[in-house]
Image 1 (tube, rainbow, N blue to C red):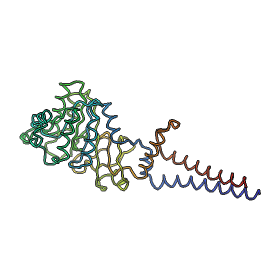
Image 2: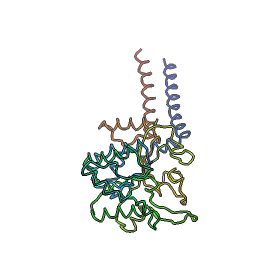
Image 3: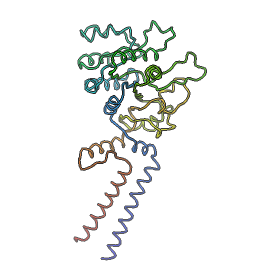
Image 4: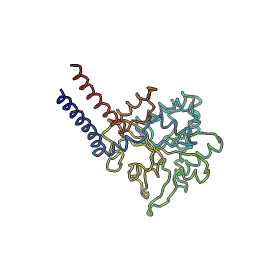
Length: 332
């Protein structure tokens, strides 16, 4: 009997050690997942809601003509008014504002609105129908008219001016700006060979109205893994999440700036947050699902499900299995 119990104890110790080694191996061989798992990840809609509550202007970067992104915006629109959003800034030439106003009032003339070829699509035009039906924020065309392209004012400067007009006329305005991700950048430090250097939208606004609170959210959809660390490390994992960028991601490259000649900068120096499709999913998506289920139980106060929780779970599992074995032996 004593020999049998000693054998069971040895099995318990070996099993417990194996579980702990499994945790260590996971952290050693999947460091990228370890970083992501211990980071704060959010559903994109919840993330955007939070940032809109805290800022006067939130820039939401897009990849043009992507139905997934446009559907995301359309689904969000009915909630925006309740979130306090008064205006939606759109990457549309400002000389189209009158036509937009006509459609919003009458429901007529949608096809008369001239959009950039890069963004024009049935899904984008459908956004106006959603805006009108929701009775929510006022759509504002903020981009430079094509007739002024040969002038001295850049598109980013014009968009900044358009947003400042809204803020100056409505001091309590809260604006969601939907533009290509490059227009969301916090700064533009161009390389020496670039002619006609200009600032970013945010830099122009800060220069004219320093008190304006702003947040920039870049968006990555099917990025090039050779140019984007976020895509390269997590592209095989399905799902979409949002996260704040900070010093934890020092040295990580984003594909957003691969096509423009700016001085290299840390990702968190360029945008404040990131929404990624096909980034952080799979295993982590399962972790987040489990975390949500746990948070729904008021007996559990933890707000994060990280590797430490995995370790605790495995320790508990090994304890339960071994206790079951011992208990079963004693009842025989």
